[in-house]
Image (cartoon, rainbow, N blue to C red):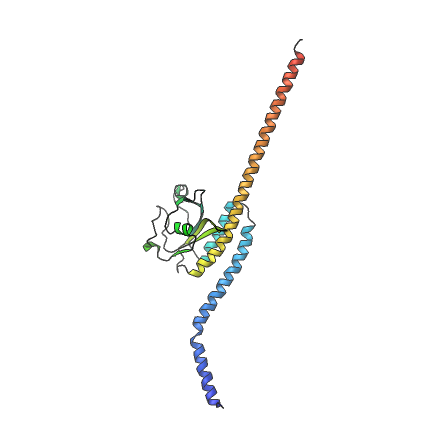
Length: 239
């Protein structure tokens, strides 16, 4: 049988062994807990965004959450045009350019193998924690704040990439977990964006049908007035 002093020694040794490992386990557990907490927050914001119908509202709220969950200074939502050769910066948040014409002059981004373009061309997460020295960097327009760290994720509806979300300047840089979390939300946001676009197309169709209906009524009224005028003329004209 094992003596009491031997058991005490084994217990003390095991305790020391356990004491040496917790920091690593604690970091892993803490990361998992934080990721789970962000997922719960993501669900809540998704419910809110999914109830919105107007595209500007959807883009604004979704981008606000993206900046908050990643601790980023600023970000943008880019949507591919019909040709998928250009990306329209449909929303931007986190900085206000001094030049009021900045958005109109730089809102279209060519889709090519850059930090932005790779996201939609390859449909995958793109992270750069040293943008200045990244070979995929192509510079930035005058008046744009410097980008030091960057995370981009695709907006995907089914198998189709419809655009991307890009966030920048998290002080500590971006991790794979943050990319994964933002990608999960971006896929949900893409559905809300697609629905908002459909809602806008439906509103536009209804508006055009109403205009067509009014034009038809006006033409019918004018035709009716002309017919009445002709009848009146026939009545008053001597035979």
